[in-house]
Image 1 (spheres, rainbow over the protein chains, first blue to last red):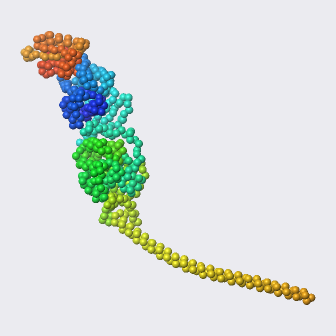
Image 2 (cartoon, rainbow over the protein chains, first blue to last red; image 1 turned 45 degrees about the horizontal axis):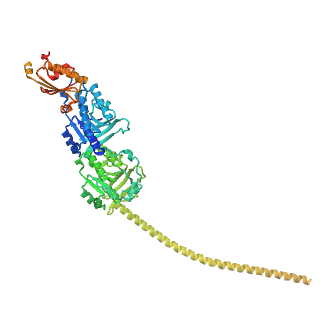
Image 3 (tube, rainbow over the protein chains, first blue to last red; image 1 turned 135 degrees about the vertical axis):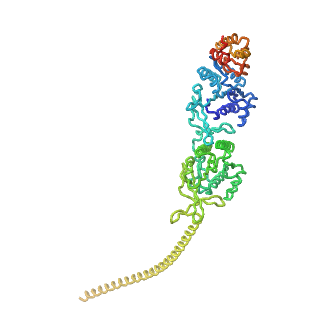
Length: 530
Length: 100
């Protein structure tokens, strides 16, 4: 059962169920329409690229549309719905149908009364479908004030109930789908946004979140070595990066640099530009040394430039989804988010972006969103969106000494170590580069020419210090030489002195021996004379 | 009113499903009306959806039994066994003064 108010896409849902059955599974289908005429259905589906007439001619589809006017019907006693069953049976047998649509059952209930009799007949019909292994989609009008359906029919059809909702707030339409119950099967309980696009019904995210629950460890280079270092190796594959800043802070350049790096790796990139045409974007980026034309020519880069106001949010998302499907980019840039605000209130933009980020994440696409901020809102306005993204770079212009310099801050980066230092980034003919900022000895940081002055100042100081050291070295060398010479002289002196001392000692020893010998001689003479 | 009704002619089709109890009852009920107060002024056709399904499809008959009043205008579908006489007479627009 598919329930929803009028205009929520019930008929679309039901018809697509039949058409995909035929196209993708070779299962013929039968549609019983109590509301729209056959020609209206064929015409409406043609807009969405479905050719019903061919399918009917091929004997794969029967559309039985007839109008019942409840005011022409008077109940006068007991009855059954054999007429409807007979008609269905004939149609089902004619094409060998596997799929049935009744759109909408509301008409039957309104015409024949919502009593036990009609309910009994319809449950008999659904049992009959089940016995024949037919899958049926039955649409019903949404009830008022909390009631799922106007006639509480979900009690009769109980295998699966899907609710469609279409809210229009300040001219922005948002469609949502919720599975209320699905007997014998697990199902998501959230409301899922969906779109009715030129490819039919698209539920977002179009890829199951379960299949991508493993977060990538792979790093993607931002194309700026110094920025990669700040993010300890780049941003994760499939992560989202917000670059916020005022006009002229270089948001687009950083995004383009990332795209350039991706294309260099041979990856495909999609650049959605709401700000500039393709030609202007390419020209502007060329002026800072980023050559995007080569990647466009190589078929690696797709620049999708259009005024954001040309489409509603829903259509924008639909087109994006289609482009992802067809072009399969690894990197997507959205420049700039602010332009989306023109499409509706901030809350919806946030919801749309959340959807967009989910869609990209599901496909493991690295995404860069730039956000233009104005005046004092600099950091606050982006906060709503920043919580949706994995990393956030803030660019800020500072004015000092009559010139402007660009500063880059890494405000956050989920799941990775990152530098909390600020960097100045400068444009060179080789693209943007980051340089470490100088800390002013008087406080603050120095950028631009003040930075150059300070660097020259430091260089002079360094030069002076070097000269001093050299001077000092020379005098020390001289002094060393003098001392060495003095040491040599003293050593000679020492040698001479010690040799003299040796001689003196020898002389003394000889003299003592001579004295001793004389004494011995004198005593011997004295003994002899006695 | 009686004068006007004298000129009217009722063109009716009753759709039945074989000899089911409701079909049999409906047939008996409408026959009674046609044979009495609409005597000579009615044209009743009985269609069995089992033997003549195409007719039922052409007339968009979903419920059985159904009596279709083609004429006099406006067209009406009388669904059920026609047991509720009051509702049947009202739907067929048979003047109450002519009650037999």
